[in-house]
Amino acid sequence: MDISKTSDTKNAIQNIANAVNLVYANGPGAKRTISVYIPSTMNLIGDNSQVIGMYVPLSGTTTKFISATTNYNVTFSNATFTKGWHQVTIYWPVGKGDNGKNFPIDISHQLQ
Image (tube, rainbow, N blue to C red; front, side, top):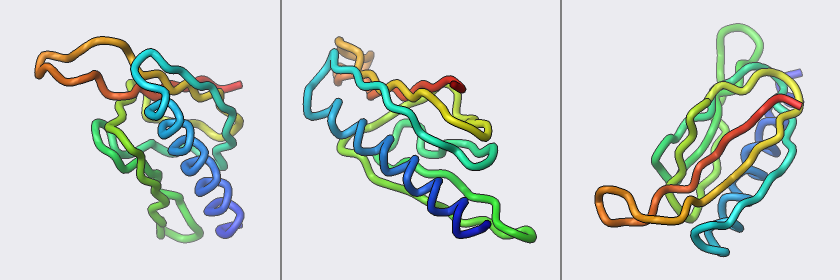
């Protein structure tokens, strides 16, 4: 089961990172929606950074951090993913933040 959980999580994280990179390549205003499977309830880590990941709970009390890099900073308002299929939307808002730079790419999701 540990290998299956790790593999499913790696696939989900990599798919999200790939979608972020596609949105980044298309520029502000771009949007992409994908479906990913999350094998157990986990939190997405990496808000406002270029590394996203999840700690996968393994047998016993151990965890493994699965991560991927993105080409641009990301944020998310709901970091908790429950077990199951999620529809993940990646959107790069048009405009500039208070610092004069483009807004970060936003990751949101809902259970399917």
